[in-house]
Image 1: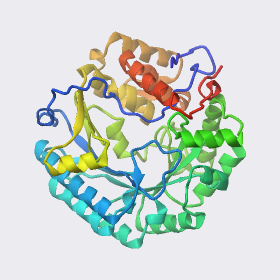
Image 2: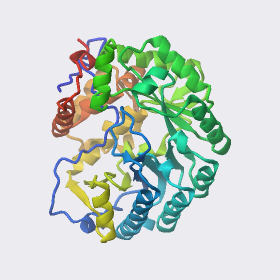
Image 3: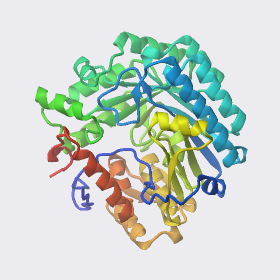
Image 4: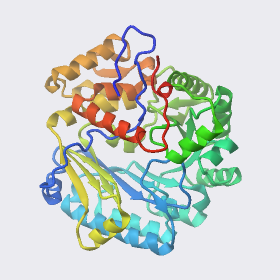
Length: 464
């Protein structure tokens, strides 16, 4: 998939890159000779803060839009065996990386559905984290929830281990699309859960999807207004990524003969959504997240930032360590991905082995990361933290072209997105990638499009 900048065109790119959040660098060159002990023994060099990610791959039902590693929940014993394995991985990795040497600023429990854990299991994992990591500078502890599995006892367990930012998947209020997505929580359960979370936490967030085939602007605004009425501090608003949604959803949409939402339609929806949310008292704080505050003319909020994403899409002195199946660790010069099979993961961990793939990348990949990721995703970077004199000429040339066509603004101290640049954040990330990374991630997109049952049409991605 070739995406080109069109500096003199109102529509700045010829196509929309269809993946809106991704890791960089990718795991391109897996080296079977690399040893986890050798890699992690140097992980703390030059790192000032760290985020931890924990993956819990259990679901009561499988949502048709979800691309993440997951599996149907079958029994309490399944989760308990997995929880025990994660706790053992915590102990193994904490020893390898000298965990108390770098403070943890953000923790994220994702899935799957972490809220399927019992209160006791939540406390067990949390206590292992508290025992093995330096949490003295912890700013944020996120915990993903499926509202049907939420109870007051689980909330109390979450609070006991330091959770600050619960998040749940709402996606849409539209009954037809909730059915299309295989979402089984009732709107009554959603409202009750949001009230319970608001009573117990200062920050609460949930997801809304838009751009589904056949969806109108009026339907989107109705979803947004109902979302705002839940009175949470945060709402994450994503365009649906049909490259990554499951084939069964593609087949269902095809049978129902919805009209295609074209790339230009999604782009215009994004602009309209931003105007609507600002009018209703929200500000964007990154490429898709909104925070409840009085809107200003700023591109993104200066009062709120998602700290976990400051490590995933941030400066090079912040890293990420992952735990559980398919969890990614993004560290200096390396990417580590845990094995995706749950039983293989549990068995290996029980034998004191962390099953993973390790790749190594050059210093250049880490050097470009702040400008390639943080700038488009969070809206600005400090020049003094970019090592600009060491950047390759090809990269600085692309950066200059984005400045020249008013997608990025340069000041004495900062590189900043313009409003128009914010509208194209994921394309800017892709555009700034070194060619080897563009080839790799484009190949991944093509492999998804070629899966049986997927029927993406050109109009969904191409602007003309």
